[in-house]
Length: 429
Image (cartoon, rainbow, N blue to C red; front, top):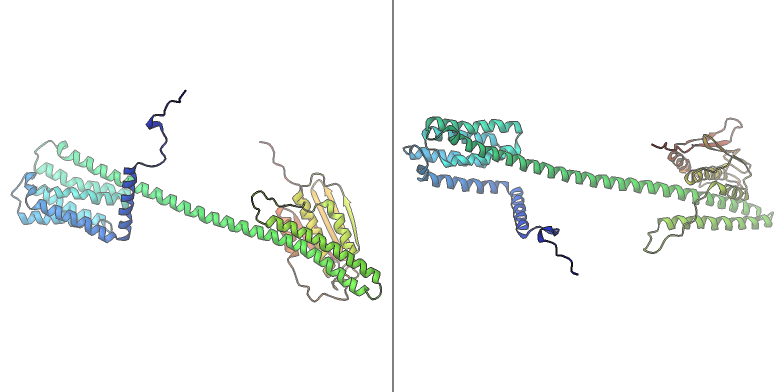
């Protein structure tokens, strides 16, 4: 059984009618030419109507004039005054309309009733297009005055027949100008909105890029900075102990290898995230460090030669992964700074407390700033890094607080205190 064919008028249109496309292209070309050569267009338009008015002044005006005895020179002068001001319809439309209305008044008073008076409607359209709307009422009253004068001087028909049709024509021209003006304003508003959206899109993309760069910088600093600090400390301690205790030097080399492989694994994970994935291929992502990995972190720092004691109170049962990563990275950075700057006799104490108000982490050391663990003095390459800035940025993501600074008692110690409040839960509506 065949399906009934859809009526032609029910079929969806996928393209405009050829005649519509032709009109649109023609209109666009005329507007483009008008924008490029406004004076040329005005000269052409004005020249056309000047010629038409002067041709009518050669004798055709007598076919409709109630008074055919008007002097020829006056008819030519009025025809010129009714058409030539079109040249100024853009720059001074009200001035051009005033000149034309004055000529139309003389035409109506003398009885010539020149058809060139209708050219005023072009200027009226320009007034509706470019001047404030309150000016449009005054322009309409000005153009109505010659109609009243002509009806008073030569009352051939009733007043409504001599005035009302022209008033309706003026009103339609004014409404057309307002409609075109509204359409142009709407189009310009859409174009401006599209431009603003493009600017906002570019700004959002730039902000997202900057945020991503900051996040990558934090991760790179935490991963590479910590592990390289451990490796550097182990290497310094191993070279120092190689002469007196080769066994400890071998242990240091083993620890360096373990730490290097761990750093390489984390770096590969980060690079896999940054890599552009191809269709059908997904990056093999290792899980981000969590607080359950804190013991492994502390063991690695102890292997590097920094004595660390740790205390954990409570359980991170409901702590989100992002907050766990923040606590982990802050503890990691604090221990890294102790390794780099604490000196050979430094010790550290890590305390993590889970409570009703969130999670708190405190890292306290007894460093003296003498240099890395296992070295004989400050490292010549040490320079202020962005570790503290990274810790503050991570803390700010979860509306937490971070305090870092030297201890008053005993002198020379350093403490980092972190507090992440409990995650807010939205109440059901």
